[in-house]
Length: 146
Image (cartoon, rainbow, N blue to C red):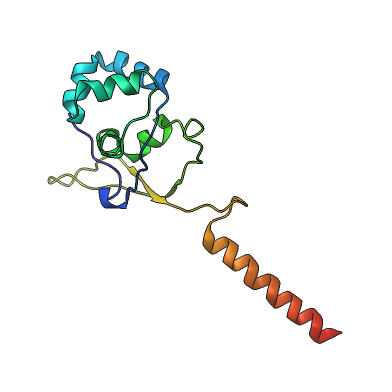
């Protein structure tokens, strides 16, 4: 059974050379009683790509996108080894959505993620801009008082 990402796939911009947490992937495969060949078939990739994942090797952008599409953003952000690729997790949960079945029943809630660009100070670009603007405002007010 394939899973669908929690947000439109076009929002996912994945860099090449993605690595994952091997132990977590192995636990998932053991729980689901999946072989590398099974996972490759479900992800629609060559088995050599799954073997790279299981060996802790980097995968290319195309495989990374298929990985995220298969696992969904909410699971993939936990499986990606952000430290190994020298980046912080750029996905921030911004909400939750739930749909209904055709008969009116509720489907499970799914988190909604958004990709953010974090600056060297650990803030988003908009947060950095807001701090700069408010700092300038307070500096001007101080000048007026003196």
